[in-house]
Amino acid sequence: MIVRPLVVSVGILGLMFAGCSQSSNPAADTSQAQTVAPNAQAESPTPQLDVPYVPTPTAVVDAMLKVAKVGKNDVLYDLGSGDGRIPITAAKRFGTRGFGVDIDPQRIQEANANAKKEGVSDRVKFAQQDLFKTDLSQATVITLYLLPRINLQLRPTLLKLKPGTRIVSHAFDMGDWKPDQVVDVNGTNVYFWTVLEKVPANLK
Ligand SMILES: C[S@@+](CC[C@H](N)C(=O)[O-])C[C@H]1O[C@@H](n2cnc3c(N)ncnc32)[C@H](O)[C@@H]1O
Image (cartoon, rainbow, N blue to C red; front, side, top):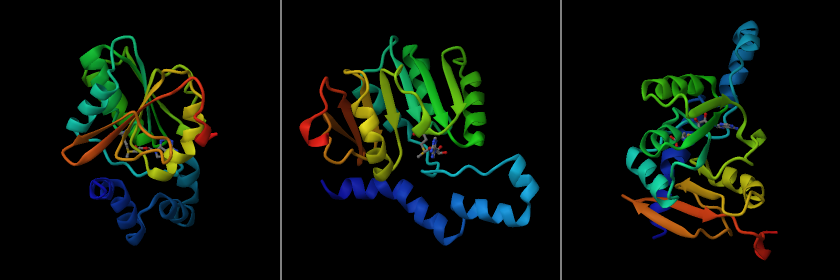
């Protein structure tokens, strides 16, 4: 039971360690760009990623949408949306409106191209912005594939959203905010919460 999340987390966490040892983490890239090509850096700054890009496998995307009972009337926000697969899949399959934010402009380009290819550009929008500066008040469903630390940083904001807002996280939980459901997808955990009327006493 304890082993599974650790194994799964190697996806993102493993990548971060590998990135550091190869000096390819975002912070290292940024400083190198400043030394080598200050003008290029000014024109096209390397974004500081709080989480590296690792796409969610299709089976996990499907399980995330299923556990949240995503439907036509939902507005799904994916925080750190990568190539857009979660909102795009929801739009294609259920007619859901979606909004993805990613700090990396390359991911936004890919997501927009994918939405166009899949014929859902009218229902799904992507914006290059920091997930921590994103207004989440219109979301009915929020999907996450971030890191434990980032989930905990987001938690106070998520707890204050409209009661009934559903939150799904691939691989990582929210510490003392116990999930309503945990689904095992081939050894990967998907966590599901519903925002309550009142913030639980232990989380205030
Ligand atoms: C693990 S990937 C998840 C991608 C997608 N949600 C999925 O499940 O396939 C995390 C994404 O978060 C983005 N990201 C990292 N820090 C961010 C930030 N501060 N604001 C917005 N996006 C960020 C990365 O560029 C990356 O695409």
